[in-house]
Image (cartoon, rainbow, N blue to C red; front, side):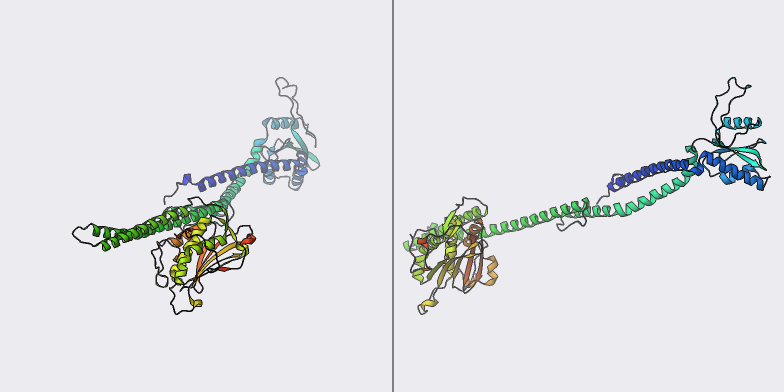
Length: 524
């Protein structure tokens, strides 16, 4: 599996975007912090220009009283270098000291020095507005405001003044003081935050996306069991669930296609085998009849022709059953939808097989529950299903012996009852039953049970498959089990219609049931 280029990686793009966003947030936060600090510093009474001037002047006065030889410049630098508000200390002897000299305008220093030299020491608490003298009035600058002042005293006499400039500290000075520290803190926060976000936010998402990618690659390579972890409730989990659902559906379709292909191959093999048997017999007898050098008497010729005729009809039955089964299973053909009388179906089944049952001494019994007198569907197809089941049962009821009592002879029983909201049609015989190993395969195409259920006729092996297809087209189901013989149960929807009074009555047997015409629809 090829690796995605780092610059095309969704994870990288999201990470870079997040880092840029965090950097922008830090810049905005820093600007907000500086603005807020400036506002707070300017609003504090202890650091207002007037209060600051009084504080510094008092401090210097006390220091001079304690040590008259003190270096005022060193003292101011040591004590007030961290004070953001610029101020200027001017002594009578001409010395000038500032905590931030670079932010004291030159014209302010000149003006203050000139005023002190004239003996006009600015008084405490007043804003000094120096004005030009007569000597430099021509071309002199306009008067300007300096700031707040406070006098410095030594031995009770003023020896200097402290001038605090008006306004808040310059932004450049604030940045110079705080920028290095804020930069280090900001970069550290950015790095640590990015690592934590990458570890706890993007790391799990990247792992899950990688697992989803691996699952798709495996699935595309033919591993139909490949699935992606779908824990969680976010978009990645939803995508994984969608992929897993798609995988389940595709796997199910693949299994269905495989089963269908297997069934198709099996059907082709079965059809080829079933069709080959009569064709082989027909070809053999036709070749025999065509041999001029082989003398055949008339009776032998007639017998061969009769066999060919029987095999031809058998071939027609097989092809007809195949076409009928294909139409039923494929949803083709028109199915009538009407109320069907169960008693009428049983009468037609009895009429169709009455002669065979009489000749073989097989008893017939039927029982119709009044609540199960009707169903809804195609009467011809339902009769076809019952005829097939009855013919199948009669083929496997053993031939009775003359010495057997009447009660032990073969019997075919049809019954109709309700099971919940369904109609149950039951076809029962008292033959040897079906071997349990054959029960799951009894409705497969061309499946013929041997041994105890060996067919005595020339069935195509499609009768029970056709029965199942008819029942399922009617929205029902069919099952088989052994209970003193083979028992076939058909479950169909009930029709909401009561049986007419003339049709109600006690269960009937072959001796009491009315006979119908003998041209009833035969079993497929």
